Length: 265
Image 1 (cartoon, rainbow, N blue to C red):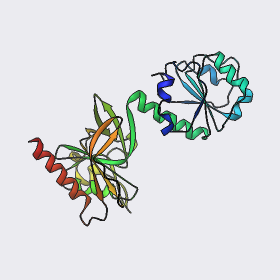
Image 2: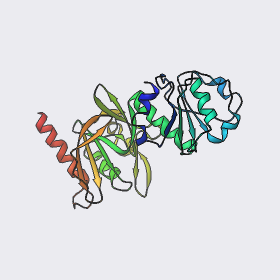
Image 3: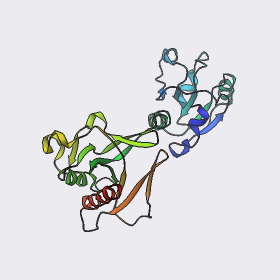
Image 4: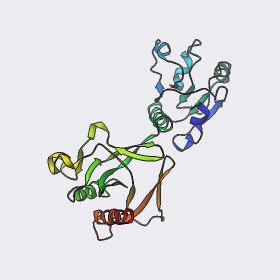
């Protein structure tokens, strides 16, 4: 992936403006953005193929001997840049991009988009279980009842993949979910805290990874009708469930999974 491909559609993740487009065909090889720390030795450790983010205040002491192998340079916290600096980067054929976002937040957004585009991986706020051999992704606002739904399904023999945050990877046109290492096998019980699912339901009640077959969104109000959830270009059948429907969310999920099993039989 080169810098031009990386920046294509990136405005959905962070605001930016390209000041110098020279070198946009440079390849990006690093899966995370490097943040300039203000030290003199920083640039000596920067290898080619990386995106570097510096703060606008660092321009005054910017080294003229920086590595010309840098794939792209971002300047955070600004809406403009001295013309001489733009010319300096253009002469080295290093793309120059500015953003008014704070450096730390911009670095987080850039790194997240890099991982998505280079590694085909995203993180989604939600929970995931496997029920009746069906990988189920449950999303919704905080407090909507995602963990409660998963707890109910675990009581019916489901296996937990992830709670609170699901790491999703695309492989050969299919999506797979897993839990971040820090909260693997854990589930939140509202008002009580985090618990190890293996302690509550046994070691059979967890699985490290699973394909995503169905998605459910718990909605607090009326939303536009959607029949699919698209993640990294892959569409997953989606059902929107009203939180105030009068029936447990887990019941809707069970019925949908059972229909899928019958259809696939």
